[in-house]
Every structure is written in structure tokens, then in C-alpha cells.
Image 1 (tube, rainbow, N blue to C red):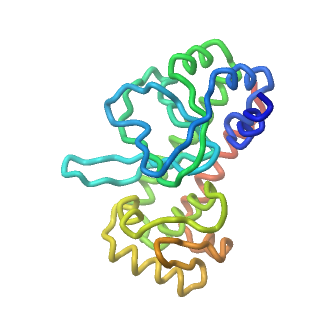
Image 2: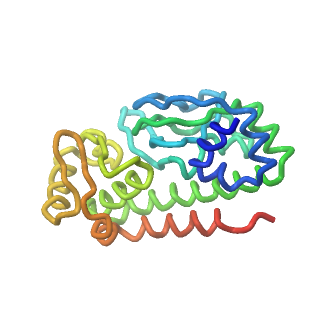
Image 3: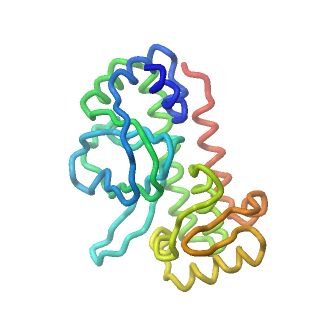
Length: 239
């Protein structure tokens, strides 16, 4: 249990739980690998498990009838996948798949709902995170409709960097184009601009963050807004 306890502290939702709540949750989870492109949820398919990532990145991806895909949110070790269960929603509205490989802790939906119902502290932390994720999704919608591609790409790279284990992000131009809902040539030109500015280095499908502070200055206001809302909600003292 000590090993899984140490691992669980990497997830910021679990790290917010009081000792008693955390102990009950850890007795119900199992470690899982999260390999790249693993589909965790499919639209309309009932949720069987929730996930608490310890590393890596999960994308929430909307798929249109013509097959077009666009990312509407991301989840890493700051959060968890499956919080819609708190509202009684068992069939997800969008797909969820692993975009950067990592590890996580998995819990059955049945156990999750029972603990959320009987443990006030667990439920409160989860509801706060769900609100933070909702804020991220709403801000992403505003960002995609109002901001230019360069600050949007800078924002996305910062969010990925926050959830990565190092400065090297394995991301193809095809993937970034899909996530940001643009054509690949636009991503190529924009990445080149960020590279010329000395903010990133891009080669062979790997983006290296070389100037984090500069990338933050290049990003649109949406990055700071989402970060601020997350910490405002998650750092409050539990009632």
C-alpha cells in the first residue's frame, strides 16, 4: 500500500483528499498503463471505469459526422477522467483517448459512485475538479473561435508541457492539426514561427520546449485563465 500511496500523490486530485478518504480510495484502485492512442471512453458507450492519471495526457475529442476530429479538453495528473458520473451521466458525449503515454490508477464506476455518495470529502474534491474541467472546456471553445493560431498553439504546448515528464513532447504535425482543428500546413508555419522566436525546437516529430517563459508570453490569455480557475477551486480548504 505504501508504494501505491506514493504513486497516488502524483495525481493532484487524490493528493487533495484527507488521509481517511484517500485510504478508502486506494483500496479500490488498480495501477494501469496508458499507452498512446488507447481509447478509454467512446461516445455513447457506458462508462465502466474512472481513471486518475499519474502521468501522460488524455484528450477529450469530439468527432463530427464527416469524421473530423477536434480536441475539446485535456486531462493529466491534475485531474481525473469520469467525473460526469457525479451527475448521473454514464454515457460520455465525446471520445477520450491517450495522446501522451503514461500511468494511472483505475477504479470501477460502481466503486466510484459508492464512494462519492458516502464520502463527503471525496465528493467535494471531485465536484471542484469537475468545475475546473468545465472551465477548461468552455475556455477552449472561446479560444478556438477568437484567437489566432500562434497563441493557441503556444497555449496548447504549455498545457502539454505541464503534464509531460520533461521538455520533450512527441507530437506530430498531423496530431497537432487535428487537436487544434486546422490544416497541417498551418501548424507547420506556426511551429516554425515559434522556433524562429527561440521558444521551441521542432524536429522528427519531437517538440522541445526551450523557453518556457517566452512561450507563456506568446500564449493567449486562455492559458492563465484556466490555470487560475483550477487553483482557485482546488486550493480552497475543504468544508
